[in-house]
Image 1: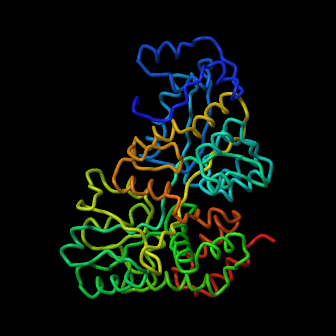
Image 2: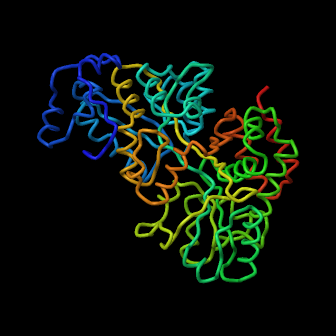
Image 3: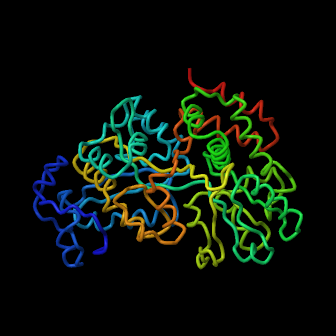
Length: 448
């Protein structure tokens, strides 16, 4: 880890005082890490704790990504003596409420929806962020990113990882063999889709999946959000998030119908997977795989989808798969949507403060990104630590001051909408419910 940049080398006593930790004597865990030659310099900020000290974390990150998450704090555990217990769940959005209301929350939770974090804050369940976390949020993230962890002027958490949404994955060799060009406008994307369909080179141009456990439907919301931002611009997008522009507004209905031109058209979906109705039951993680067997040509999904390709898949402009950003109405448009997570705390115990502070640091961001598959909007991140050219490009987009970035709209909306009726509405809509009826259903659920 000697290549990680932007470390803060602070004396252990001063650093511990800064985040409210009392240092203890050398533990057995410390002796073990010293014999393993772990460099504890970057972790001197966080203090040391008695053997058996545990911090629980609850989140949606699972499978390989969960393994990498555990690896990202392995040295932190060795150097501090804290045992981090991570619990993944596909029912996070439901169960975090159940656990908080039942008085059995985790110490920390990784919220993929700022709206859900805000609901927990407003209910008095999570703690305001410690000073060190708030300071890291201010130091390492833009004002836009800071506000995603802020509720009514109080910082409750700092961002963790990030993703750039709106990528369209494809096979470079398939494009080359058929003479297809990457589109630069939305009109060109529709023309490309029509050309692919007419060519007969694949089963259907697009492959799509909405299934995701209790969160089924969210991939559909990403489609709509991308089209709202590209067709209507950031001001309308922001007003939609706050309900100044309603779901029933013609501008939002236009986005639904534009998305429908692709994924409700039986001639265009669902390549290698079935008909339009199969979208609702196809796991989102599996939905892009037909590109590899040549039954589908295009798949809409975020940067994190790189981690879903089978082992041995080459992600490169001349590899097995690559991706382009969903274009705008005009060539060269720079508006993108994205997502991320916010770490909130249900406890202010010193060991919890230590881990929450570490997760808000540039040290953690560089370590996790270097392990592969993800990026971060932390401005202390060295883009060269990203594990592929695609992810390096995505980091560049996030760090480019000229990029018009907007967080995933459904994640910013009240939980009853963003993690409820919007998801359900997309499932009903892909099943044949009209745009008017779907948007009315979602709008009627907005909390009064």
